[in-house]
Image 1 (tube, rainbow, N blue to C red):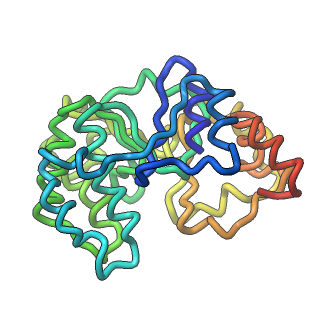
Image 2 (image 1 turned 45 degrees about the vertical axis):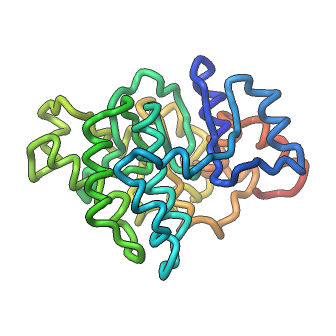
Length: 261
C-alpha cells in the first residue's frame, strides 16, 4: 500500500524499499505506479552497506536473525526500519498500512495502542540520529530474539518509549508531554487493536468511515492475520470503501480483474 502514501502526501518523497538488490517490474506495475505518482520511487537495498557502522552491524552480518525462526523477513524488517530512520529520518510503516490523510506534519511520533499500553514500531516517524532509534538499536543488539513474536518490534518500542520518557505507564504520555516522542493513539493510527482486525471487513459500515473519522491518519490491516480474507468490491467494508477513495488506481484495476482483491 506504499503508493497510497504518495497519493495522500504529494509534497513528500515516498521510498518503497525492497530487500533485494534489484526490483522486479516484469508486470510493469512499478512503472505504472511511478508514472502516476511522481513522488514515488521503488528501490533495492544494499543491506551490507546500510548496516555497516550502525549498532546493528554485527547482529545483521552474523545472520542469526535468519536461522531457527519462522519469521526471518519480520526479523530483518524490525532491524532495517531502525537503520533507515537512523540514517535518513522520516516515516516508516509496515506495508499493510493504509494512509488515509496527509501525515507530513507528524514529527517524532509512534503508533500507540492505549488499550494494551503498547507502542508499535509498525508506524513511526523520527528525525535522523534520534535518541529513540539509537536506544532501540542498542537494545536489539543485546536482546534480539530470533523466534519470539512481538519482542523485537512492539516489545522493544514499548520498552524504549518508557525509558526515553521516564515512565512506567505509557498512557501518561498521552496527557503529559514527553520531549522525546509523541504517542499516536488508536484513533489516529491503527484504529483497531490486533484482536479487532475483523472490523475492517464487516459489510455495510465503510461508506461513512472517512467522514466520521476525521482524526484518522493511518489504518493498520494486520496482514499476518487478515491476509486470507478477500476484500469484496462494492461490499462497503471499511477496507473496500477506503480503498476506493485513497487508492483509486489500483481499485479500478482490481474491478477489471475480479469481484474481490
